[in-house]
Image (cartoon, rainbow, N blue to C red; front, side):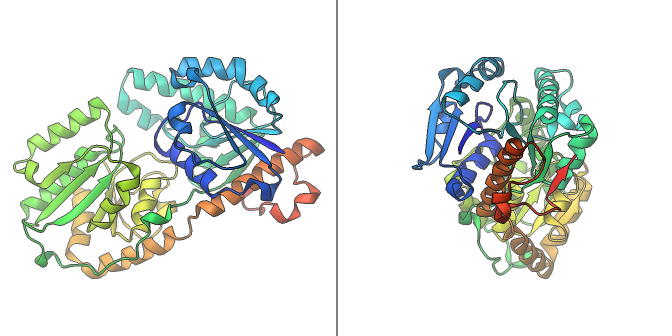
Length: 403
């Protein structure tokens, strides 16, 4: 069998990371796929490791605008997939307007399905883009022959937003790269910290409307006023309007320039070192599907103060201290609990590290390719059940839903 992957709408962020790690861990031949073809922009394809079974096809138009990529998908993708003799098409980016069947898609972006989060952008170009994505993804999800979710939370939320999902669905969490994994270290007491050697709180994420970095700044400033020697380190690319709001929060706080360091984006290969140098982690997002960043911090053995919204309780369970991401007072209280209690920090860090160890890219790749093969088998037999020859790879009843 041959698998085609449309990466035309994967440009940055978690979607690209997912594809990189999925293909790095994959053994397609174990599921009957002898050849995998990926179509995408040059920037995305350059980040995929070469494999004997992998063919990367760069199309210049896929470096262009959303509308240009939509037009290519509508007019060209099906013929490209047929020329490559693909048996199934995988659309990890979540929308598909072409005519090729069968196809499997993924839900990776929750923003288009949560109106409360969308309204943070006002009547803007970003808001209109999210409305378009909601329409495209809703249409795609209903038409797909298979649909992959990252969390149960995402499956419930999307199902509620668009109604019944006629496709066969499965929940397949992604993994954590091993370079982030480090067992929790001994927790130092806040009394041992100083202005020269502060307690370092890290927050890694794109500066955006739903990430609430400015609330984290306010929370840390409140704790600084109590005399705690803290440093907040913010890492991530930024949207201009959100960065303006962040810098405004930094200016409002007296002495904030000395205790808050915004470092912008850093190479992904260097990111693990930043986790390993921190004393604690804050995660203040209010809209996620399955946050890779939160899993990275858990795998790095860090004690974490975390947003209580979205799938975060499903992912972290009792391994973190929760707060309302829009309430800097609640956020400060959660961080203060960790700061003052090294035993609590050690317990939470240990629990988080152990939970993160369950998220494996190898298992993600195994379940994803097993599901893709199952969809091909369903198309061959004309029924929604696994191929008889695929008994070993059949998904458990709890994982698959026939809607």
